[in-house]
Image (tube, rainbow, N blue to C red; front, side):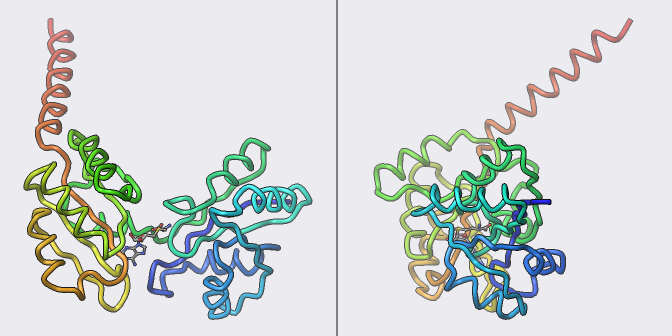
Length: 248
Ligand code: SAM
């Protein structure tokens, strides 16, 4: 029976691929991946020779149609991306939605995702967070984007390339002011690092040390403490009202 497996792959350390993911990739009839040149070495390392089909942002409609046709024909397909969890700032949403609309089984096979990996070790509030993907390019678009997030009570998590991170941190410093923030870089890899400070200090650190601009990074900033406090206050008042109503 046909199943679409959504399979997370490592974000650096190959040992982070689960044994379940490995088994499913080996047993699937087809693996839909972003870039076959990128995924072949990983699959080769695992001894997997399942046929590959490329599904990336530039051929998503056609590739999605081919995967759906394979599923309709009773095949099982594993969807992977270049790194981490598919659909998280990666292609696959069009496919997963269409598969669900057609009543096909969609099964997640969880593993690494840089956003959650970073949040789990950054030391910023993790009870509430907002993942916002990649900041828009261009100074004014980025400025407006950060302004629109300024009142968000949860920790903000975004993806960024090392090169552009300095500009994003400077805009955060200007719009949000000093707030606890973290740059989590090269997660699960040899040069993994976590830098903590306010956005202005982090921009200075990155500028002073070009090594810190290399590779991939996740940027995290604590949410708006005022809206957090207001929300907590509103919740306390709600509970007090319920208790007061229940009292004789
Ligand atoms: N689907 C992936 C996931 O679940 O994490 C994200 C894909 S997105 C196209 C790539 C971005 O993820 C990078 O620009 C970087 O911001 C972040 N990223 C991926 N691997 C990372 C790593 N090892 N360390 C830090 N950030 C990483």
